[in-house]
Length: 394
Image (cartoon, rainbow, N blue to C red; front, side, top):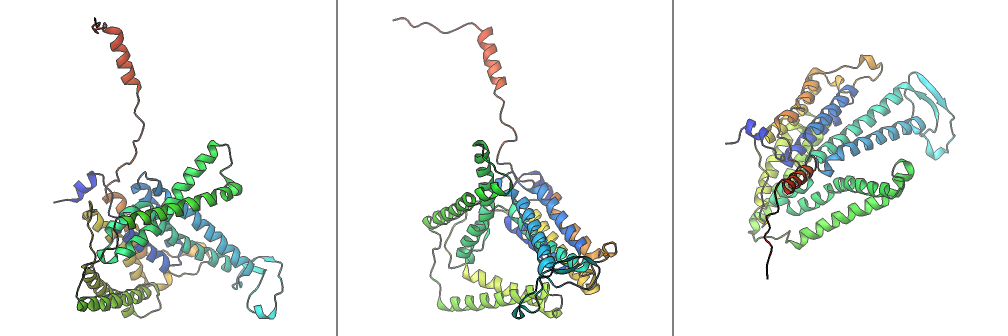
């Protein structure tokens, strides 16, 4: 029976579903809080786990790309608030020239006074969206996108194909950027700055799309999408369960993310939707005809990783019930920002996968083999030993 110690000692790839469940938990935490301290803590935990457990595959560098996208989001959100947003009452930092707008644009301002509370609110909103993007990037960096198809339930066969093609776009994009930039450096062309990004953008997008289409074509040529015959009653029951489960999960997730909703709309409705969806998927899986080659195991590290993501969500949920104001505090002054203990401890528990999960196997050797010892031994042998070849006489 596998134990935590044996799972940690043997290098293997963790089940991609565990990484995605863990990342979804951190994403839920980031979406429910506007506290900059909690958002920065989520970023730190995600970055630490990625640095400790990502492989050396090219798609494992996706986390850095998503961080850069998050920085761009923060800048755009702040600039939009400064230029176009209505200022919030407070200390005026500076005043921009105000452009008069026509009557049909009433309520929209261009320029004018820029206050500290409005800038702080814009930066916090951008930070929250950047944190969500970073959590998605962490899942892309840790979970092998090609193994997601094998991990999908049999009922979600076609959806799994579409999801894998879509999720493989970001890792393929990172790989293409590295390869094309290296090729441009070898040719002596610029690969950095605005000019380098513009010249690299089109080849990168074209290559990533071609890879995704090639993957979809390969799946289609191998017989993906075969169906088995099932009774009509089973099909109707499956449709009802899946539809009810989808509605229940949607309402439950909305209730969890919306702090102003009733309590019964959160976890109870979500659990009911999960139960119905699980039953529907089990019945729908009878129609899918497929085989699995070397399925990824779900062992102790996977359970601990999923529990770590659930602990982060639980900490924020407890904080929302006891002190909801700590999740959406007044942003000024910065020194007076509260740090809710339950939410912070839950987020720190989310860093447990950095220690309890096995290290991923290396796909490339750490250093190329040195041919000098073999060459030296061959040369020494040829010098020390006489020539023992026997001449051929005819």
